Image (tube, rainbow, N blue to C red):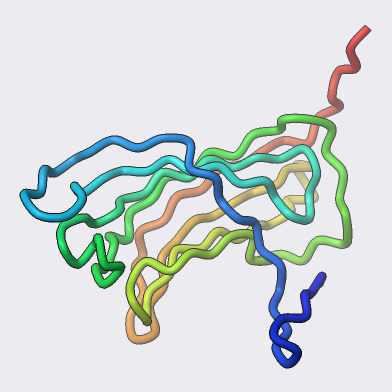
Length: 152
């Protein structure tokens, strides 16, 4: 696993960082930002040629604007082959690819990857966890590993 030295004392695994693609408002708030659904994209840090798109709820209002609100556990994911697929290092089933905090302290949304060797496919699972009690709500997507056509 690739690691980065931070603050001279702390080792952290490198995870993908998301780029916001767009958002839609779902609930108008008189004070603070509206509740939204955001769409984010991130590239798999260990697999070249794969981009995942994640849509999830973001709570608005005063608490949401201050970063104190707890976002809902629902999310949707779609990963696609966007170039030739190659592995930067050996893959381990259940590797965490992406993680983002969805409450002030105890809740996060994460994406993990599995390699289905029998079908030659990468499988990505998004779910929410919490220190005390997680959520069974999840979404899954799969990418068959196919040759990438070369351009003339």
